[in-house]
Length: 124
Image (tube, rainbow, N blue to C red; front, side, top):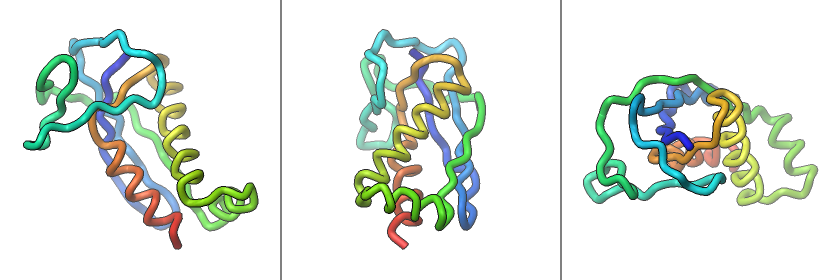
């Protein structure tokens, strides 16, 4: 399983580009697959079972989340409330990254920032 950091790169009207960063040569934890997110320390440094991680992140790939009015309308037509739509997008982020890096991953930071940007557009 790979440790990943998500960095919102470009927020446009109907989509959000997100840079997917990994830690080359970093620890590869034996964690269960899923939408795991490590907590952040009070100072904003990433933390987890391995202590504070280094700052040697590299861009591994990028993903794009689309939330055009038609996309949101389709989700509402499926009787999704705001929380269900956020869960949908969180799972979409996980699956897009998993496809791009060809392995399971755990997010050490950035997921909440990405979800907050998406939520802002879903509430319109």
